[in-house]
Length: 316
Image (cartoon, rainbow, N blue to C red; front, side, top):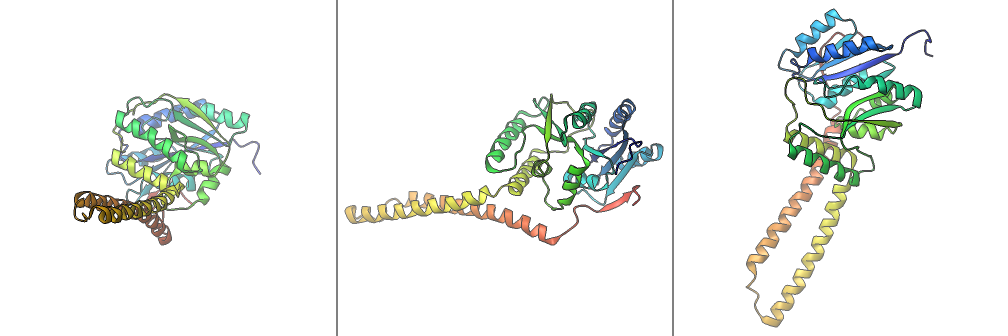
C-alpha cells in the first residue's frame, strides 16, 4: 500500500552509447525539469559499452547527485538491452525512457504525468509528425516499414513513435516479465496492451554528437520487428512455393505440347535457364526467411543473459 505522505517517484532511463558530448546538456535539462515538478526523480543511465568518456561522466554525476544511478555493461549489447536493464532496476512509480541527445523533449514529461493521473491512461507516448533533419531515404523507408509491418502483424506499430513514453509501474512490471533475448520494444509496448495516449511533436535535431544508427543498423532492426511480431513471411514463402509449383507444371505442359506439335525440343533453352535461375533465387529467399526464424529460435533456446553488468552504483 502506498504511503500517502510520500511523493511519487519518476524514474528516467537513459541508454547511453558514446554520448559524452550530449550527457552534460541532458543532465542540466532534466535537473531543471525536476526542480519544476512536484515528484521525486531518479536518473538511471545505462552505459552500453561506450568507448568515449561516457562512464567517467556518469561516475562524476553520481558522486554529485544521489538521484543519479548508472549501470555499465561489459560490452555493447544494444539499446534494447539497455532499456531492459533500466526497467529491471527502476524503482519509480512511473518510468520513462529518454535519449541523451535531447531529441526526446523532457518538458513533455509534465504533460505526460498530468494525463496519466487525470485521464486514467497507463502510458503516454510521443510520436514525431515530421522527420526534419533526417536523410530523405531513411525517412522514406521508415514510413514504408510501418505500413508493411502493420499489415503483417496483429500488434499495432505507430508511425513515428519514439521509445520515449511515461508508463505506470504496472506496465513496466509487465515488460520486465518478457525476458526474450531478441527484443523489439516498440512492439513489446503495444503487445502488453495497456491504455496509451499519443502526443505529437515535430522532430528535434540532436543537441550534440552524432547518431549511432546507420541505415544498415536500422534495416536489421526492422527485420527484428517483422520476425518478432509476424509469421506472415513464412506464410508468404509457403504460398510462393505452391504458386511456383503450379507455374512449373504449366510450363511442363506447354513444353510437351510444343514438342509434340512442332517437334522442336531444343529451342528456348535461354528462357529455360532464366526460369531455373529465377526459381533457384526464390528458393534461396524462402530458405533465408525460414532460416531467420530458426536463428531467432536458436538464440532464445540458449538462454543467454540479455546484458552483463561490469560496473554499477546500484545496491540491491
